[in-house]
Structures are given as C-alpha cells and as structure tokens.
Amino acid sequence: MSNIGSYDDRLKDFSWSIAENELGYKPGDTINIGWYCTDRICQLGKADKTALIWEGRDEATTRKYTFNDLRILSNTFGSFLSSLGINNGDRVCLFMDKAPELYIGFLGILKIGAVAQPLFSAFGDESLFVRLENAGTKAVITSRKHAPKVQKILDKLPNLEHIIVVDDEGKKALKPKEIAFSLDQATPVENFEVYPTTAESHSLLHYTSGTTGQPKGVKHVHSSLISQYLTTKWVLDLQEDDIYWCTADPGWVTGTSYGIIGPWSLGVTQCVKDSGFSAEVWYRFIEKHKISMWYSAPTAIRSLMKAGNEVVKQFDLTSLRHLASVGEPLNAEAVVWSERIIGKPFHDTYWQTETGSMMITNFPGMKIRPGSMGKAFPGLTPALLDPDTFEPITEISKPGLIAFRYDWPARMRTYWNNQQTFDKKFKNGWYITGDRSTIDKDGYFWFIGRDDDVINTGGHLISPFEVESALLEHEAVAESAVVSKPDEINMEVVKAFVTLKPGFDPSQELELEIMNFIRKKLSPFAMPQEIEYMDLLPKTRSGKIMRRVLHAKEWGEEIGDISTLEND
Ligand code: WT7
Image 1 (cartoon, rainbow, N blue to C red):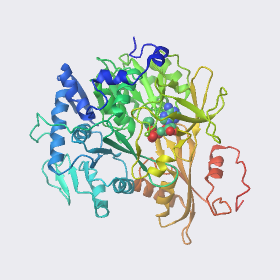
Image 2: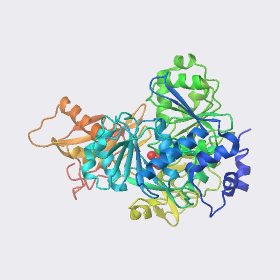
Image 3: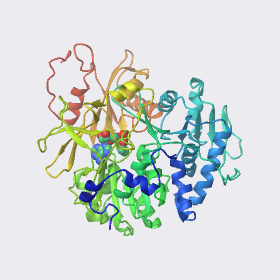
Image 4: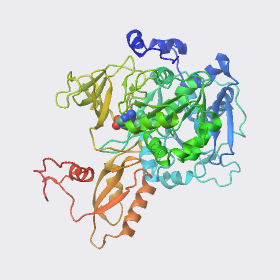
C-alpha cells in the first residue's frame, strides 16, 4: 500500500494540517529544519538508525552516519559557526563536492538560524562571485580543492569574513581569511540550543537563472518543511525501511528539498554518491546498497538508455521499488524503457526552485500516461492561463501558462533584494511559472515548453544573458547571441553565435579557447557546445539581437514574422 492511498480521496480530504500534525507542529510554534531532520528523529527512537551512507569517488571509501551522529555533528558544526560570530539571518555558502560535511554543514547552518546558500562546486569564479556578492555572504564553507576560486574573488567581496576549509587538517595551506575546521577533530557538541526559528524565518537561498539580468536568489523559509515532508511521503512514497537515493547535488533545489530535508524529516536512510555519471557505477551503487527508492533526472535516464540494455543485465536491481524523475521533460520513451528494462517506470514530477516542493506529479498507484507530468498535488489550485488575458482556460487540451494560487508552505517568499522581479511573477492573483502546458480531459498535464529564452540543459537552467555577457569579456568577441540547440542526451545544449573584433579570424582553435573561457568563468553547463562565427547577428531595427531567429534556425522551425529585422 502506498503512503498516499487514493489520490482522489486525498483531493477530497486534504489539508496541510495533515503534515503539521504528523510533524507535531502547530502554527505559531518554533520550526527549525535542522532540528526536525536530526533531534526529532532521535526523540522518535531512531537515534541509532542509519541516516546517511556516503560513498566517495573511489567505491571502497564509504562512511555511515546514524541520526544521532547527524544530530551531534550538526550541533558541532553549528557551534563552530557561532564561535566565528555567524548569527541568525547571516548567509553562509556551501561550496564543495558532495562530501558528508556538505550535508552536515547544511544542517548546522540551519540550527543556528543562519541561511544556507548552496552553490554548485563546478561553478567558475564569475558565477560564484555574482551569487556571493548578491547575497552579501558572510562565510563560505568549502574544501581545499575549491577554495582557490573563492580566493580569486575575495578582494571584491567586502562582506565575506570567513572561508572555512573542511579538509585542511594540517592547516598547512591556509590563505587569507581561511580557517580550518575538521569534523573529525572537533570536540563533539552533545547538547545544543537550536535557534528558535519560526514559520517565516529565512532558511535557504538558492540561485536560479532568468532570461535577463543576473541570477536571482530564491528566498525560502523554515515552514517549507511542511510541503517537503508531505510531498516526499506521498509522491516519493518513502517508507520506514526504504533505502533512498536522490542523485541531485544540493547546489540545486532538488538536492536540498529532496536530497536532505524530505528524507531526513521522515527519518529515512539515504545514500549519497560523490561522483559524476557512469552507467556501471550507478547500477553497482544501487545493487550494493539495495536502493529501493530512486529520484533522478531525464538526462541521466537518457544516458542510461544510451549505455544499453546489456549493462543493466549485469546488475541485480530488484531492490528498486519506486522511481521518480525531475528537472526537464521526461520523454515517453524513457518511461517505457525503464518499465521494460529496469522493471519499474520513472514517475515524472514537475516543480521549480521557486515552488520549493513538487507541484505536478505522477503518484504511486496512479496510471502513468508516458510523456505526461501527471496531476497537481492535493491542496494546490492549478490553472492554465491564457497568455494574453491571464484568465484560466477552460477548453480541454488548449495550451496555456501553468499557474497556481500562491498558498502552499514551500513557496518562495521573494527574490533576494529583487522584490520587483518577484512581483512580476503574478497576474490576477496567480503565480505564473513561466512554463506552457496542456491539460487533458482527465486532468493530466502535458509539458510544452518554457515561455522564455532560458536554456534547460540536462536539467540546469542557463541564462543566455549570462553567457552572452561572459562571452563579451573575451578579447576576440565583438557581439554574441546565445540560444539552445537540440541534443540527444541533454535535450538542449548551449550554442553561441559570435561576431569577432577586427584583427581576429575565425578558427577552430579560437572556438575551443572561447569554450574553455566560459567553462572556467561560469560552469561546464554554461559552456557553448558549438560556436558559430557570423559577419552580422540578426537584429531588430532598434538594435536588439533577435535570438528568436537563431533559435528557429537551430530547431528547424518556422522563423515567423521578421519584419522588424534590420539586416535580413
Ligand atoms: C524548470 C525549473 C525543480 C527541480 C529542478 C529544476 C523545468 C522541471 C520538469 C518536468 C518538464 C520541467 C521547467 C521548470 N522542469 N521539471 N518534470 N518536465 N520541465 O528546478 O532549476 O528551478 O527549473 O525546469 O521549465 O520551470 P529549476
């Protein structure tokens, strides 16, 4: 029997108080995610239950932590942060690979009432800089490997007081503002007074990209737990004896909402693998740890499909009970493939950094329509809006903008220092996701696409504006336009069109140099997979570059009205 039981029944009797009661929380009480994920689970009698099984890049290196270990170590981390003068409300960035310290540091930050700002460790110094500057970050928790990128931008960050290096035990290589902290060597803090955060206390700052301007900091609060707890329970269907694996990095919202908060607030054991993708490594990980619930992403699933069915047969994957996916469109073929080859279908889930928790999902027990995102979570009021009037569309299967009434616990509270952009997300009292979809006669949502120019490459949102700005910093580039192009595995990848400055000639060597320049400055995902040299970029008469024309060319679509084009 699944946790949700019948979806239709839950629609009828739904109230968020179901989650509040199970969590023993009453509106007005203190609520601290760090405490809920550790101390409370120990109080429920599960102190000795395994919370985390961590495996390094080298498969022989594993570490296990019980909920009591997590409780004590997050106390220890939290009191160290307090001793540095970090207080409630201060932003503390986590910038490292998926080491245990990342997970424990996250909980420690929340326990002192500070704000966790996880950033993906593959970010280059420019990507890191804009996010640390915007957040006015006070401390960065990092590792020896990634600390040099922080050092590089330190002079431009007056608010940054501490760089905490978690693996420099000999304190040999410390640079300005760096301080070594080792969880293994610190005196364990048994008892700790968790900061009394309440429902609206700021918990997390996740950065996400839009079409224009710099990345936006999405402000989340401690009561997001209520949504995250219940969606984990009902959609991921986590049960007492499950061994759970969320493949997402906590640099992205999936890795915190469902890679930390969801499973641990339910007291469930989870596995973490600190490595990139390889079909053999992933299947072996499932077999070795007997993973029963697996939450992953379409790009990974497509890569597994590409690796072939022979590889699957070499492993025993019968421990798998339930599979789910998020981040980008999950093609029907991937659902059918997983059911046929792995024996279970992936259940698509749809949500956003801004929503903080799942919105549209395929529930356990519900009939999957491959290619559909499923139905709205109980308690939500969804609609498809007409893009001109922003009124709900009532016609079946007519495309519209996915929108929700803004009333679930995990919704973002604002964009950090950017209330104006936040306000623009609303029309007629609806929160506009920026995605387009249809709804069929039975209430299933079918994703069509984004309503903006943001590129979703392998589940990572990339702003064309950010890549274009970075390209202009290369000495050879005069102008640039960035769009997506189709890709078999990542669905979309970044493609750049550039014109060169006088004195520079197009060459393959220069193409590679520019690609590398972006990879180092921004990230591997933002790196264009192809650079096309042009003499002129298509522009409107007012001088605006028309990405639309270049996009249509890449996707073999009709270009549409180009009457405002200057150089056609
Ligand atoms: C955007 C949000 C939420 C976790 C990771 C992404 C796209 C997300 C799906 C899906 C089609 C999807 C949307 C959305 N997206 N899930 N199941 N099917 N598209 O969070 O980085 O904020 O990206 O990802 O375009 O708006 P994010």
